[in-house]
Image (cartoon, rainbow, N blue to C red; front, side, top):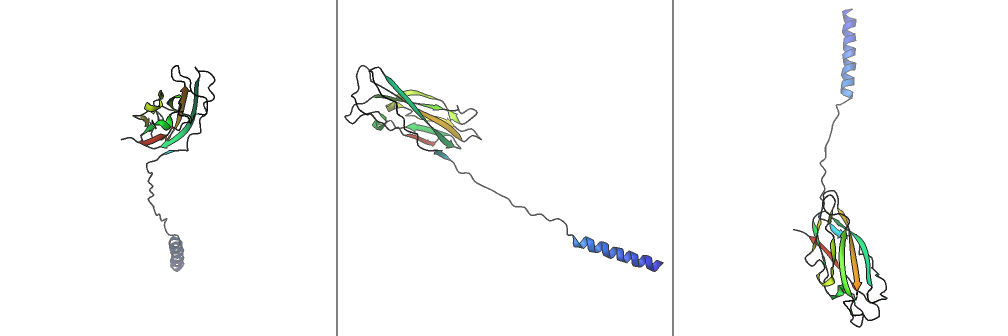
Amino acid sequence: MKRRILVGTAVFCTLLAGSILAQPPASTATCIISATVSEIMEWAADFTAIDVGTMTHQTDVLTGSSTQTLYTNGHVTITADNGTDAELSEVGGDTLYTEYGLLYDHDGLTETGGANVPYAVYSSFIDTGSAVTHVAGDGAVDVTLQVRASNAGSTQADYGSYGATQTLTATWSS
């Protein structure tokens, strides 16, 4: 009887040891992942062309606008071209009184944006810059460029086609 108990115990221990050795414990490995996001400031595309229409009376004031998205993950300043390229003029040299304004879809408090810029004559339009404040988690602002054209004072512009190119430049704020 002792022998049977001893043999049974030996068989049981052998089976138990075999099952313990057959399944090693769980093993883990870790990997640390990192990424870097560069400073991003870029326009989604150029603004679409603005056709302010046709002037048919001396007192007409023509307006138009175009909207474009500026992507940024930091504070930026937008400036404008204040040169003669931004003034509506025709081939003969005559000009229209040309003004520009800016609208932002947000004010920079809870979403990226800035303070709207009222119309100003092309030669002084945002010459000191318009601040765009970045808000964490929101990396885009829609910027609407507005244009207004009229006759200066009591003068009447020559007939013909007038054209201008306004360039907005975004730079990093300090």
